[in-house]
Image 1 (cartoon, rainbow, N blue to C red):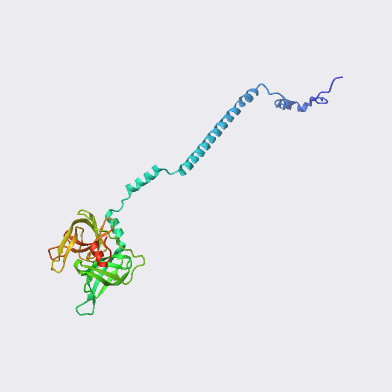
Image 2: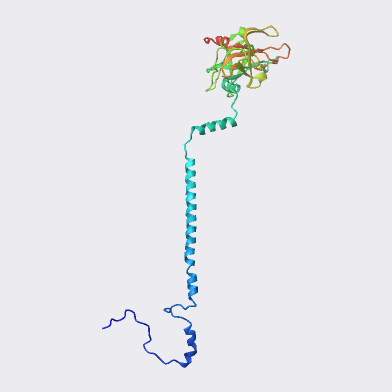
Length: 317
């Protein structure tokens, strides 16, 4: 007995006689193939022509994706490289290069400038006041310089700056103004020791240095208030040792002096003569000028600091 078919054919159950009125439309209907019908020979070229475009499109998409992935990988690699560059360890070569650039672009202060900076906190302005002829007004009788040698307010200056003054005024480096009293004098060396009545909290005493190893040609700096202007600094060298000086009027005769050529003028008297280390080796006391001008012409004198220290009662070096 034959088995029934799994799929039945789509055939009409009954055939009817054709309708004469519908006959003209039959050719148009015949032009539209059914869904199950195979393509006609005329349609076959179009179907086979459209098929090759699909692989080409896929290849283009894959190429685009490959480019995007490569670009992303390059971006990630670049970012990682930059991250490593910013966090790398500093080497000695980097430090040396930085120091070299600083030296090439920055001018360091000179030795004289460093010496002035070192001694500046210990420099004071000294003014001796007196009375006018009518006795009604206070006037300046002498302007000079002093140097703090003990941080309690002990100051060295020249005796001729304060001798005969009714009042002595002191101005410290920080601007503090006060008065002072003479507590000691050494006329043979033109030195006076002052005690300030009020001192700054952070007052610094100068460093003193023996003249034992001082030689002509050594660089020195004079710091003071020439003509009341300052503090002012001038640099020069030691011109000689153990010099003698007699004032033009013959009132002062000094010996064992340091001769120097750093510019000094009236007002420098009592100020320090310092080495390039900022250490005091002498107290400026006189200038030599055979004319009445009393201005500097290249020869100045300073009392050795050993003599000055003995005036204060300090032990020798």
